[in-house]
Image 1 (tube, rainbow, N blue to C red):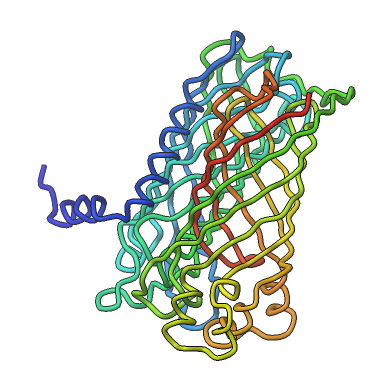
Image 2 (cartoon, rainbow, N blue to C red):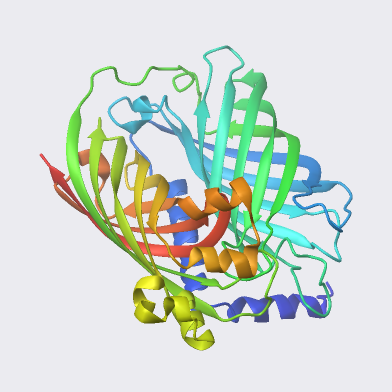
Amino acid sequence: MKIEPDFFLYIYYLFQMNVILKIFFIFITCLSIHLSIIAQQTTTYFFETEYAAGKIVPNYSKNFPSSSVQQALTLSIGKASSDSSGWGKYYRFPETGVSFFASNMGNNAIYGNQFSVLPFVRFKLTDKPTPWFIKLDIGVSYFTTHFDSITNDVNVAIGSSFTWGFQAMLYKTIYQRNKLDLKVFGGYSHNSNGHTQIPNFGLNSALFGISSQFYSKNKSTIHQLQSMNSEKNINYCIQYRDGLGFHELGATSFPVGGEKKLVSTNSFSFGILVNIHVKWKAGFSYRYYQQYYDYIEHHKLDEFKDNVNLNASNIYFFVGTEFLFNHVAIDVEGGLNLYKPFYSYFNDNFEHDDGVMYQLKRWFNARLGLNYYLLNTLINPKHNFFIGTHINANFGQADFTEGSIGYVYVLH
């Protein structure tokens, strides 16, 4: 078999990744392996293949590159637990695992091919003989072709080889046998590098397809929709985390080729644990943008020179939810900026938003990602530590990619 020279270039670029990006990729890969092999006593394993077709959905109006039909193949390995003693019953016995996703984007010269590793959770929505499901994926994607100022300057959607990958799919079962389910599905796929490399408009796709799911044993015991526990078991907790992120300074499409610099975060929150499966939390965070500090110093901006460190900072109040699955948690936060003095100048010189969109990005931020806890959250330990990886945004626009380490103290 002849191997094209481009194959060796892809391998070379892989090893030239930023060290922090490598750490994020290793984190997601290890998490995926963990999700695919951990089991409880009553676990049923499954193997699933999918074929999907669809189209890239334009997310900007000017000179968006054309493309033909996008096609994708997915291989998923997972488990469906019927254990009624833990989170399985609380979340109505969802399926968890990891999907390996490969797609041709419909324009080889501009977008190339996509390969993704996506941990997932799939929730059952109805208790009908042929039920509906919703599947949520979050992980890492690799693109064989991305923006290049000389050879591919029209691909402003994907600015780097490695990106975050998100998918949300709705499934409908159309045929069942003891160890086989056939489903049709459709939904949304999104990829973004979290502003770690400009340009980064992100790439959105609408996909529709069919799946074949093969179970390791008779699945009759796991297809019973159960209500969440009606008895409320409440605990309170205190949580602290340190975050270290990185990004390039600029708008979605410019300037290209800037230096990557750090964003550090200290966060403190108070939380309520409901039935040890859901954590509601609220608190305050302090962020420091090295990009802002260096920009102020370099351009000698009079309005910020009296206290450069403070003007490069961000203080915000946030509320959030963690959905706990033993060691793994899906973490979602929304924040209100109480102090972010440099953002107005940043918008005037880079983003150029006005009106409602400017106000939304100025005042609101968001975080989405995964945490991995050292101790199983099902045993509700008094002390626990976690590591996490998140994408952070100004309202809906990516700001930076972040890794975190944190500590939780439960008030038993």
